[in-house]
Amino acid sequence: MENYTIIIFIMAIMIGLSAMADKVKLPYPVLLIVAGIGLGFIPAMPAVVLNHDIVFLIFLPPLLYDAAFNISFQEFRTHLNTINTLAISLVFITASGIAVTAWLLMPGITWPLAFVLGAILSATDAVAAMSITKGLGLSHKTVTILEGESLVNDASALVAYRFAVAAVTGTAFVFWKASLEFVLLMAGGFLIGFVMSKILGLVLFRVRKNAMVTISFMLLMPFVTYLLAEELHVSGVIAVVILGLGIARFSNRIFRDDLKQQSRSIWEVIIFLLNGLIFILIGLQLPYVTKNIPDNQLWPYIGYAFLITIVTLVLRMARVFLQQVNLDRAFQSKRHRVTEHALLDFKTSLIISWSGMRGIVSLAIAIGLPLTLKDGSPFPMRDAIIFISVVVVLFTLIGQGLTLPLIVKWLQKK
Image 1 (cartoon, rainbow, N blue to C red):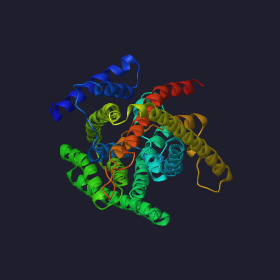
Image 2 (image 1 turned 90 degrees about the vertical axis):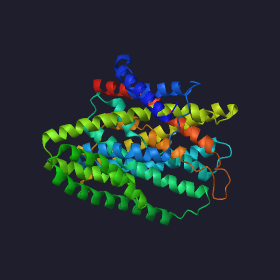
Image 3 (image 1 turned 60 degrees about the horizontal axis):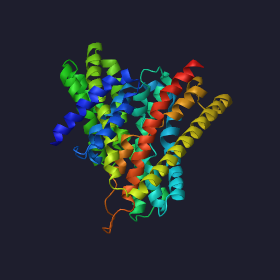
Image 4 (image 1 turned 60 degrees about the vertical axis):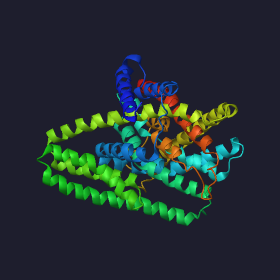
C-alpha cells in the first residue's frame, strides 16, 4: 500500500468513526485511539510511524494558531497567573516528579534518562481535553485556562527536553545558562510572533476585500512563522501563539462578519481533520513500539507507566488546588492584582486537574529521541522510554478521557 493510500484509508475511517461517536456514547478521541490500536495490530497493516519533524511542522502550528486566534485576549490576561503556573512551573514540577518516580522504579535508569522521560511527559494536551469535553457546557473560564495552558506549556516542555537530552549525551548542565537560554527562547519567540503578526496585519488590511486571498494568507502564515522562529533558534510554539493572539485582535476590528464566518468554516474543517488524524496516529503507535520491547519487560513497563500516570495526576491536582488557595489569599490581601473573576472554585479546579492528558506533542518528542550518542553508541533505554511514553499517553487519554465527561456531568448536578 502506498503512503498516500494509507493516509486516505485512515482519514476515511476517522471521519466514519467520528460520525458514530455520538451513537455509541463515547468521546470521539477515545474511539479513534482504540480504532488506531486495533488497526495497528492488523498483520497486513504497514507500520505508520510518527515523524517528529512532520508533527511539529504540519500539526502543531495550525492547532496552536487556531486556539490562540479564538481565545479571548482579555480572558487570557485575566487568568495569566494561573496559566503561567500550569504552563511553566507545573511543567518543571511534573518533569521532576516523573524523573524521581522513574529513577525509583526502573532498574538501570540514570538521572539524566529519568529526566528525559519526565520532560517528554511534562506537557499536557488540551486539544484532547477540549475535544472530549466539547458540548458538556464547560465554563468560559475553564476553557480559557485549559487552552491558555496548551499555548505555552509545549515550549516549556521542549526546553526541559532539550536540556535533559544534552545531559544524556554528555553536555554539561549549567543552571544559569539553561535559565538564560529559556528566557531567550521565549523572548525570541514572542518577538518573532509579534513582528509577523504586524506584517500579516498590514498584508491582510490591503487584501481584505478579496476573501480567498485573505484566508489563504491566514492559513499560510502559522507555518511560515513557525519555520522562521525555529530557523532563528527561538521558540516556534510561542511565535505562533503570539501570531494568533495578534491577528485575533486585528480581525475583530477590520474583518467583515461574512469573512469571519467563511474563515471559521474553513478552519473548522482543517482542525477537525488534524485532530482526528492525531488520535488515530496515537493509537497506531502502540503496536509499533510494542515490537521493540522484550516479552518479559512488557508488563513491568506497563506497570511503570501506570504509576507514572498516577504521579502526574496527583502532582497536577496538588498544584491546581494550591493555586486556588494562593489566588484566594492574594485577593483577600489586596496586595496583588487578582480580580474576583480570576479566582478558582472547587468545580473548576477539579475539571482542570482531571484534564491533564498527554498527547501528540509527548509522542512526537519521544519518537524524536536521538538514535545514537555523540560517540556513536546507541541512545540508552530509547525503546523503553518511547514505549512508556506511549502507554502513559494512552492511559491518560483513555482513562481520563472516559471519566472526565462523567466528572463534568456530576459536578453540574451539584
